[in-house]
Length: 100
Image (cartoon, rainbow, N blue to C red):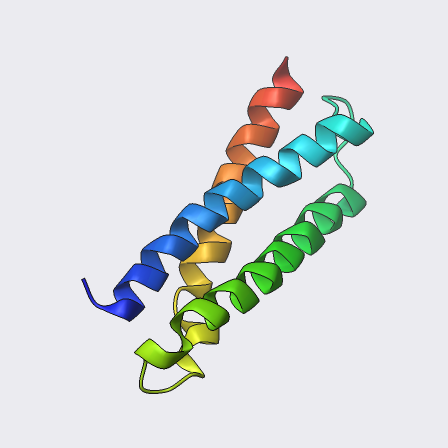
């Protein structure tokens, strides 16, 4: 598998992991409830997803910089699948947790 393909699939897995982190944070702070969903709850999750993306960007950059032609590709490869996977899994997990 090529380096950029590896990064793409890694970002998919990280999107799912970020959703788990966001839901875990919501459970720890008590912001997940079945009675009210606020815009603030979504923004908390989104900011945690962005922070997770940036942290792992620097880890990926450190690991794969010498293996790609354009280092700029390390930032953009897989960004769509990361946020799509995060959004889908965050909504699913949030819905399951809030229903309980």
